Structures are given as structure tokens and as C-alpha cells.
Amino acid sequence: METPSYPPRLAAELLGITPKSLKASLEKDAYTPEDVWDLRAKLNLYPPSVGTRKQLFLNFKGGTGKTSLSTSYAWRLAEMGYGVLLVDLDSQGHATKCLGFEGEDFQHTLLNVLVKKAPITQAIQKSQLPNLEFIPSNLTMSTVDLALMPMAGREFKLKNALKEVEAHYDFIIFDAPPSFGLLNLNALMAADDLIVPVLADFLSFHGLKLLFETVQSLEEDLGHVLDHVFIVVNAFNATFKLAKEALEALKEHYPEYLMPQVVRQCTRFAQASSEGQPIFAFDRDSKGAGDVQVLIDEVIRRLQSSAKVAPQVEAKSA
Ligand SMILES: Nc1ncnc2c1ncn2[C@@H]1O[C@H](COP(=O)(O)OP(=O)(O)O)[C@@H](O)[C@H]1O
Ligand SMILES: [Mg+2]
Image (cartoon, rainbow, N blue to C red; front, side, top):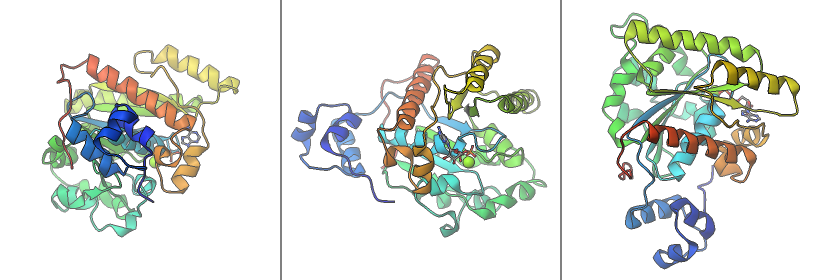
């Protein structure tokens, strides 16, 4: 994947300043992500702080948009000026691919960290954005669940491994596999918030019920309470009567968790991932990118209104 390049209007928008003040600080025809990041530091233009949030994109069902949404979400947060770590938990390595990398090219994944006790810093990789890092995944990760099975404290491995690095980031975003095993249990134990992409169909209801039962038993058996659960309807098509009915049913059953806006069906997601790009790099004007931005703004608004936070983040990665 090519390194993104921002025209002046866009670079100014990302920094929240006018094109004129951008020009006054650094005049260029196109700005690299490094230019934007350096200007952010120079002009002290950081977004509102939300502390360090660990957020897990999870649904035990496959194909609901966990990877499409988590990678776009992480990428965009980094463009907005947050320090972000994206953790690919799925042995299919789709999140790794969405960032333009091949999982098989990396020797270190979470398997080394959780099972072989390698330091987590060994598994962290740099992306095309200076303040977005990631932990890749590949097929070797498919053995994690079995390898964790006999270990003591097996549910807490990820939570503990992250302690060493989490203060460096504003957001740690996990892209989960669609399975119900020890790795996802580790991810749940490590997470502050859960983001659940669902499709507006009635099959998704059953999956949600199972998810909420799991979250409840986590509280009862392992004493871990999530701060927030956000349900996001993805790939919504309002021309389908059934989709509208399913959305109404979700509103009725999960009013406190359901995000007010849906992510609409958008073919650019599929095209972007086949090109190995998050949607903001592939087509930032698409409706999919617009909807993910609305999701991010709403999540940040809710995090801010539920926490006492400092007005700005400090530079956490460089
Ligand atoms: N909003 C959307 N509109 C249209 N297609 C989408 C949307 N979100 C995801 N997709 C497509 O649906 C498929 C499954 O998405 P993916 O993110 O891989 O799901 P998961 O990670 O939950 O298995 C992919 O082909 C992806 O491109
Ligand atoms: Mg996926």
C-alpha cells in the first residue's frame, strides 16, 4: 500500500486549522502523514483526551464487519491525532491485510507473546501512519486457544501483556475472530469497551444474546466489568423491509447499547479490503467512511461524557 498523501485542504482539516494557517506553518502541495504528525506536535493540535481505551470489535458470528470497521476505525483515530495500536487477533490475518501487510511475512504475533512469553514490543509493527502501530496475525495464531488451555491464569495473558505498553496509546483496538474460545476470552478480559457490529437480520439476534450472556458470566465468574457496549448496525440497506424491521427490533431490545446511526451498505468496503487499504485511505469520501466517522464521533462523545478527562491528549507515539 502506498503511503497516503494529503492535499492542503485535507491536511488542514485533519489538524483542525484553516488552509491559510497550515500554509503559514509549512507550505507544500501534498502532505505526508509524518508532515501532519510533526505539525500536530509543533502546533500542539491534539484531539480531546479519552484516557487509554481498549476496545474490542467482537461478534461470535462471522462476516458482520468486525475487520472492516475495526481497521477503518483505528486508521481514522490515528488520522485524527490519537496514538493507536491495532491488534489483529484473527488467524486469518484480515486486519493485517487491510493495513496492506501479509501476516505470513511476520515472525512475531500474539502467539509468541501469550504462549512463548516474548515481550509484546517484539510483536508491534509500524504502519504507514506514524501514530498507528499494529500487532499482525497469521495462521500460526490458530493454535493459540489450544496452547493456552493448560496454562495458569490463561484468561489474563493478554491483559497482562498489554500493561507494559498501554500507556503509550490512546486507543488499543482489537479485531476479534468469530469464535468462542480462550483468545476471545482474553480479549474480553483486556477490553474496557465492546463494539459489536451486527447485521440487520434476525439471525444476528441469536448471536447477540449469546454475547450478552458471555459478558454477564465474565462479570460473575471473573469479576470483569466492561465500561461500555456499543452495538453498531453494519451494511444497512434501508430498501429492505426485513432490515428495517430488524433495526426496529434491535432498538426495542437493546436501546441503551445501540448506536443511533447505522453504517450503510457500501461496496467500497469490499474494494478497499481487496486492495489492502482501510476505507479512509481508499475512498475517504465514500458513505462508508462518512458513517465510520459518525460512529467515532459518537463513541468519543459518550466516552467523554462518562469520564473525567483532561482536555487534550499528549503525544504518545512518534
Ligand atoms: N458496510 C458494509 N457494506 C458492504 N459490505 C461490507 C460492509 N462492511 C463489511 N462489508 C463486507 O462484508 C464482508 C465481511 O466483512 P468483514 O469486515 O470481513 O467481517 P468480519 O470481520 O466480521 O468477518 C467483507 O467482504 C466486507 O468487505
Ligand atoms: Mg474479520
